[in-house]
Amino acid sequence: MKKIIVMIGLLISLSFNVLIIPCMAETRITKNGVYTLDYLKLSPDKNYTVNNNSFNERTFLFVFDSNLNIVQTVRLWPQSRSFKLVPLKDGYKIAVTGEGELIIS
Image (cartoon, rainbow, N blue to C red; front, side):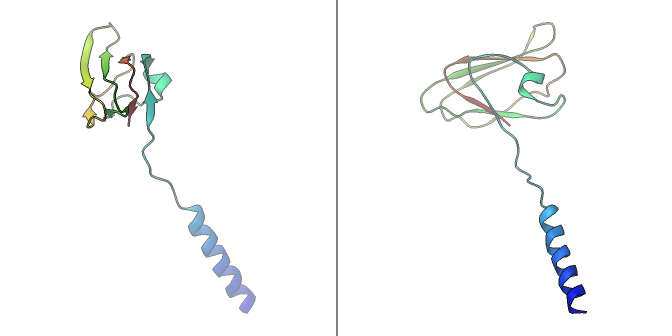
């Protein structure tokens, strides 16, 4: 009887450890360049925020649609607050200029 209780207790404690799922948002750090949603592993039609993580460099972010029309432009100062991006669609491109590091989450 004691062996069964010990085995059940062991199985229950192991099952709780298996069910723990990390729920942190995945962030993407981008620098100067042009990126697609696939390259950044961003899902279409979701809301994302962007902020400049560098200490002394300004950065500009441009969002283009599939016809290369500008959808959104954001100028980010060093250590800026987070800005909301428009919901991104398939075929959108993101251009980053400047020496700062942007975090998209």
